[in-house]
Length: 213
Image (tube, rainbow, N blue to C red):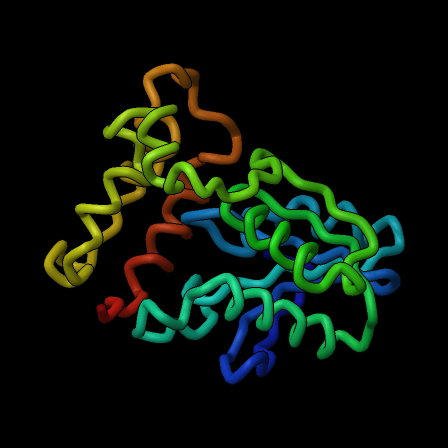
């Protein structure tokens, strides 16, 4: 997107793509699933115009950031360490953190594990939910949303290599995943799901390697 700079930084043994603009206090944006830095393009422009250094990475395994092939490389510890290394590379001690969806969960972990690196946290869509010793996360999701919820579906769909699905992620699949998998959330397609946005996200997801067990 015009006016936004892009570069690759080395973080925690991984190459991470970041989009950034502006100078001043750092506002770090964390995208959700299945999204990219691109989800924050409008906020990058807006915050940079107000005197902030807006930074939005592609998180580990997404977009132009490296995607380790082992599923053991995607723990919350790995991603928090990625974020800490990114903050270090920006030359600051603290950031204003803004995160959505799956990125919000990682944002909560960053606040828990490294609170001294976060000046303030703006959490969108996913409140802090401590793990319960009485119920596994997937059991709780099935209890709320039933088996047709997209995360519940993934427990079967992605138990096989992605290549068996012809390495294709169709834009319509992303729209369906977000807007149609939960019966109680039926509403028209919002601006965030314009055809161009869906195409960009689907192309980036299609390029990613399969994970190994």
